[in-house]
Image (cartoon, rainbow, N blue to C red; front, side):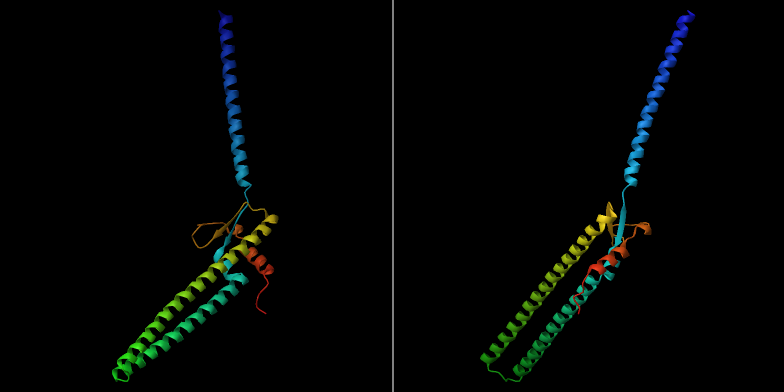
Length: 198
């Protein structure tokens, strides 16, 4: 009887030991898996660039913006001049018409001419606005291509997994300033850029 009890006890202890050992193996594999996951995540190199600062300090962008501002001012000045000229002609027509300086046919001709001139001015406004919008889109594409090309070259050495853009609170609510590479990118872009100004 004692022999049977001792045998059961040994068998029970053996099963418990095997079960605990199996749990240890499962726990060990889970811990190893988690450690690998943390290690992989910890291995990510992430940095961010403040887009507002980049645009404000990148010489290519500064010159491009200055050029666009000049073009917009020229368009505005041209449209204002033409608008004032048309307004003066309309006032003169109104004055002459009220003082019977025109025959009925001549008044109609002058009215038609001024209406055509007003329509032409509207067409000119639309065309110039579209030209500015097209040029602005082209400039934005050039700027993006310039930055993308630089970042590809820059990242061959730095080996970042992600470089995130931060414009205000649009994408990134908080980041440690240690990961801010904005000035490094601005310096690299400006060093590479050859100004069109001579």
